[in-house]
Image (tube, rainbow, N blue to C red; front, side, top):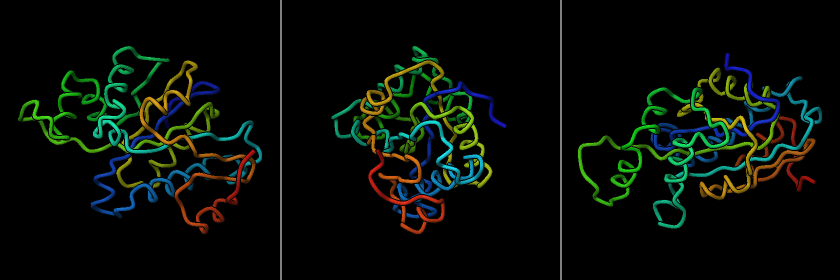
Length: 211
């Protein structure tokens, strides 16, 4: 079982989009969103009890390196700086061990540069493109349950999560990483999720504009 996190926390869940695209579907974002939403529904106690949540769910999502590759937002560099400074109590202990070691290594940015053709050297293994789903200020026990449920279900490509135990500006953090901040659940109304209407109905939600 994952450790108990703070009453309110920020967490980012990491997926290997390359693996999912190769073994499940090119529409990896939809697969990830459906997996996270179903696991989140199971983590809410009682299952599907969305109205019992003390506050609306706010989340973001996207490929970490997409904008970095285009030269718009240095998301990878931002992440590396957070790791180095342990920004907002950043904790990587729930990440895949090999991935955590890679992200903490000095070669992290160099490897990313090689992947996107900047010719900064040779000999490093290729790195997958991480797809992140982040949540702001959700109750810690819900995010613990979400992490455990994604693992229990054997979700393809899941690499764990990193959390921030100290307060932070979630909207700015999402923007700094080049992620889209539009996932919402308020009561039983949701928006922003790249899933079918059947998935939405199955988890006890309806699509709309949350307050």
